[in-house]
Image 1: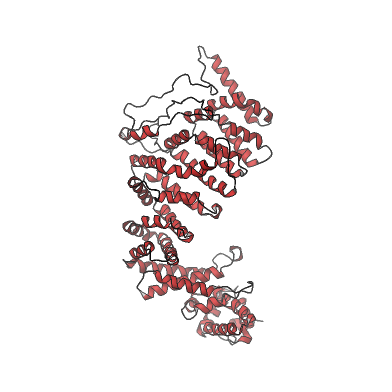
Image 2 (image 1 turned 180 degrees about the horizontal axis):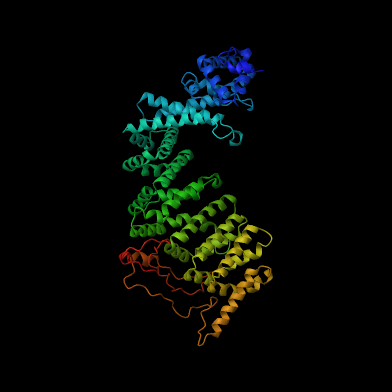
Length: 604
């Protein structure tokens, strides 16, 4: 038993011998709750050169296969690391001690078999030789920081098992080491060019490439965390043309390399989206091949073998940053953004929608496994973003491909989260309250799968049922008469059994009130009903005389729509003319003189 006298006089440590390992383990464990006692013990261990003596005992125990002694040494070494004292880190992470320290940590009593930490650390150190630095002190610092991180990963308990600030000195030790490494590497003008050269060199082995890209990822992450160095670092990356190298790495077979490259791209998309967007726009203008950066990102998203792992969210955030017009406005003109969106919808959108179109027809959903459902849910989240942010281009795409019909097929999926995503996509479209969208929906009878889902989801999925009712409630609250008329005239009989849902009854009431008002108007001309099979006249909107058809807009204009039986009429309704101050992506910005005329846009 450890006495208070022993704690107060740490210079008298137990003799470092095998027979007293239990006593040493009790001592190290007993001080964990006292900051003062931890400091005294750390001083005693350093002053008496105690750690090398313990590691000599480890070698003896391992040689004679003394399992009990090895388990005690695990507790002792881990306890010393838990002291979290910087004066001990230099000793424990030194070349002389590090392998025996991690060797002790291999013999966790909770494990059926010892770990392989020494082998892993040795292999890691060998691979780090590929890091191109000629300064021996800097190389030593890189190895030391790597060792510290490795040990931190081994000994760090579950988050629920330690208090805030646990191992804070170890974290500070690692951070300060990284900062020294960063400053040292930034002084070496040849470092980054050599890194990029080795990453793309065919002579670099897969393991070396993996270690190098992981090191560079940490280098980037730490550089971005230092605001005073961030801009300078980004400028250096831009000058060296790093993005083509990153694009190449995102296309390799090695999952770890691709993952590290994706992490780096996400840092760039977060801290310098303009740089990545500029590269994507330049690449789109100059090349029509299928290895471009944005295609690499989309393909990783739709080809994910484990969508739930978390990488999908990262890839989606990258894509959001790349195709967000609001962020593009920081560096690009409106004409350049519109040009990019033209290219995106001409070359890239089909890659994003391919998984959905591949598994759906107009009537059925052919593959309904969980992995596919996760991928399609991610795709629909991105496309819902496009509905709001790329109003003009996305509207053309949806109508030309009759895409909403294919999307609503997914409401039959057994995976309710996917059915919700499909419904959310339609909700975003209806939320725009766009006349052309409304006519497209009614003429295509696209409320039918929604109404079927309402009837099918009774007492099954409360979340889906609530989302369905919210859609109809939105139409009622916003008084979208065109849709109200269509719903009541076509589905009132089917919804009659849901009298307990007031929304449907109120929709019918609104319909009848509107009909009464129309009948009371003198010389009123009946409006075209959504259910009619032809359009009596072409609906057109006045357009500013300064606006003309551009070649790109003529190509993008909506084609005539056809139903599944081919009987729907062509729609000649024009897309709503934008108001002054509105942009053609879905947001708004201050009016800029004659910019509309300069763009030569005709809102078809």
